[in-house]
Image 1 (tube, rainbow, N blue to C red):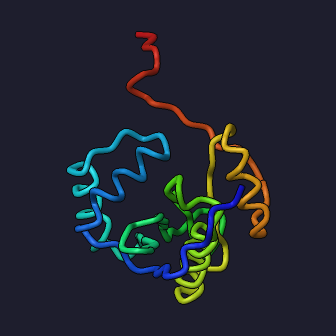
Image 2: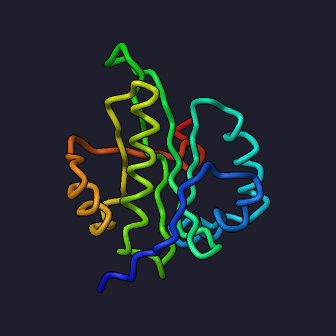
Length: 155
């Protein structure tokens, strides 16, 4: 069942003072993160022009965030965009917050002449897959992940 839309929702650039709220959002997404971890990450990302982090604030509370990155690739001559993280608080989901965050990211990408955007989600996040497809994103491949420090050594 959809939540009520947050009527006074504002999308703005994240600040280092948002670290606690963003850490909480990462935990909701399934990544154990502390406020101090998030503070370190924000201190690295906010000044880097390739990263953008936007927060959705409604009724005085951070309701969601989106983090993006602009990068060159070997396949194309122009910059591409990636959505690195998108999460909305449980009590704000299905109320339009995610859609507004995606719109803000797409507008920012367009202002930087980025016309190709990629996003990854886990196989088990079926709701996220449907969300992105409703917004016009299409499936085009698989992502493979390896943690080299956990790989068995043969020597």
